[in-house]
Image (tube, rainbow over the protein chains, first blue to last red):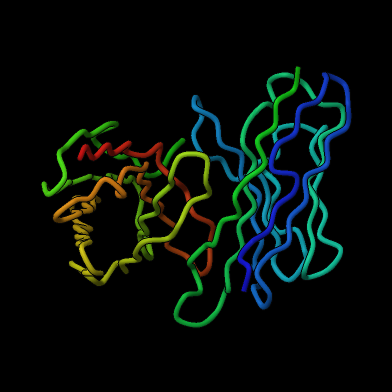
Amino acid sequence: DAGVIQSPRHEVTEMGQEVTLRCKPISGHDYLFWYRQTMMRGLELLIYFNNNVPIDDSGMPEDRFSAKMPNASFSTLKIQPSEPRDSAVYFCASSPGQGPEAETQYFGPGTRLLVL
Amino acid sequence: SQQGEEDPQALSIQEGENATMNCSYKTSINNLQWYRQNSGRGLVHLILIRSNEREKHSGRLRVTLDTSKKSSSLLITASRAADTASYFCATDANSGYSTLTFGKGTMLLVSP
């Protein structure tokens, strides 16, 4: 398996623009997570899905953030409009949810977002 | 607030030495995991220890868990320059399947 795939790897945009981050989880994993990592706040969970259904989005900072998972192999995290304080590295991770490695999370390489 | 807190924040050692990192947490857990993050990369799972386990080994890694003190330690023996990375502990809530809460990590530098 190729692991968790994220795109783009880097994104530079101007304040007010819409940003869409994409994730392809590992096939067969039931859980998908979106995290944001900054120096100040560390790694924060934004939202997670179980079998394509959003379970907890309490970590989403504002209504400007939205996430979807239309099918088991694709998820998006959208920021509209973007602001400079959204600059961070955004990670997608997936987890089997069952079996001996149920709780292990597999991370993608991240998308480094810079909002000017 | 962060569930897991790593200590020290940064650690610098020479190749061949052992590196010990500690993690403290606040509430009861099902399991505790350690992850590694190389610069510019995603996190990689290293080892999971369950609340009913006290010690676990994986290659050069040794993890201990003391639930009475709500603490864990990660020992890397005979360190190598390639071990240079940030190390995070992650804990879950003690109720079914739950999400992980990550600490801010220990940055380990292993010099040749």
